[in-house]
Length: 174
Image (cartoon, rainbow, N blue to C red; front, side, top):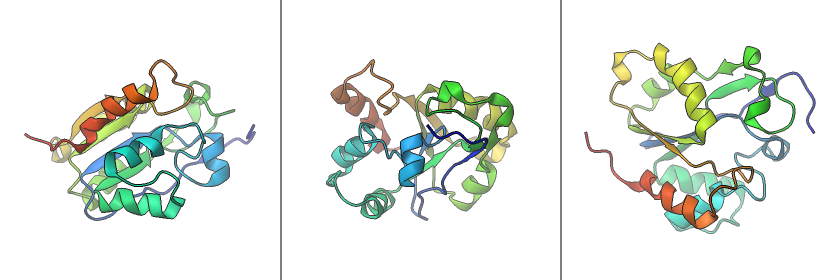
C-alpha cells in the first residue's frame, strides 16, 4: 500500500475540442504506480471507452489518451490532492482535500457541456466542494452520475456498466 500523507492527482486528459468531461475522485494506488488514469488492470474504464469509441483497449496509454481527445472526451479528478491509505474513496481523510480549479478549467475548455461522474463519491465531493463555488457563468453544464468503473464496485457486471456509460455519446440538448 502507498503510505504517504499526500497523494497528488494527475493533469487532465483534455484537448480544445472536448465537449464531455469524465470526473473521478482520485487515482487508485495502481494508477499512481503506473502514472495512468484508471491503471488498475480490472478497472472497466478503458474497456468501456474502447467499446464506445472503437479502439483496442490494449493500445499504449498515450494512444488511448489520444483516442479520447480525438473524440472530445476529457478525463480529470475532482481532487488535486488528499491523504488516503489504500485506494478506496472511503479512506480519504476529508480534512486533507484539495480540489482542482474547475472555474479555470471550464473557462479554458468552454466547449465542455456534459460532466459525467465516475461513481458516487466523485459526484458527492463535486456537489459539496465545487458546485457551490461555480458562478452562474457555468449554469449550462449538464451533470450525470454513472456507475463506477472500479473493480471495487461489483454490483454491476461489465455489460451493465457499458450500457449505462453509453450516455456519454449522446448530444446535449438544452
